[in-house]
Amino acid sequence: MGTRGHQRVITKKGELKLSQYNQWDSYPSGQGLQILNYFRTGDLKKYQDNLNNLSQITDEEAAIVDADKDWKIKYPYLSRDCGANIHQMIEDGEVKFVQFMDDDWCEGFYTIDFHENKFIAKFHDVTCEYPLNDLPSDEEFINQMERAEVDGGAVH
Image (cartoon, rainbow, N blue to C red; front, side, top):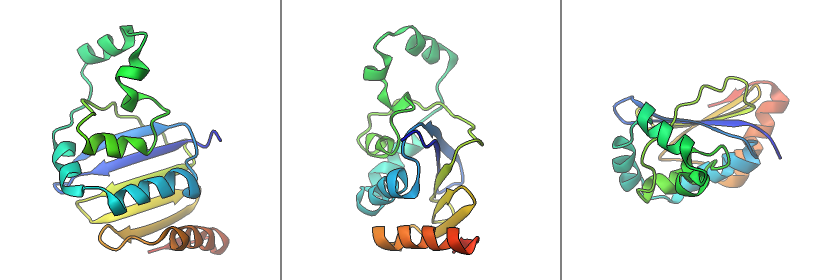
């Protein structure tokens, strides 16, 4: 479903390294769970090492990408279709550069903040925060997001 989302990743030093739009399935049981599952099982040391080496796309790199008719194949991490898959791609060293997007009009926002040790999920007016070293199960996450929506508040 075309539920728009935005992912952000902040390094241990507090630097925003990823700010990416995704077009599909950005509700908690879609992209939310995929992101949560990656951060439960991924190699976070390797991820953070590769994340620290990422840079924003330069004008020259953007011109090369724009001119390439196969850019979605060569640079899938720049596509709005990439979604949560970008995290495994970062861990695997496949992401060469990122393009920051500012998408305040999205329905789902997911922030991984290594500086504050938090995973923050926001869907519409519902926000839940979790320590990165104590992430909830899938069931707990969905139940808390749904409960916060019914209660009209946030879960911390």
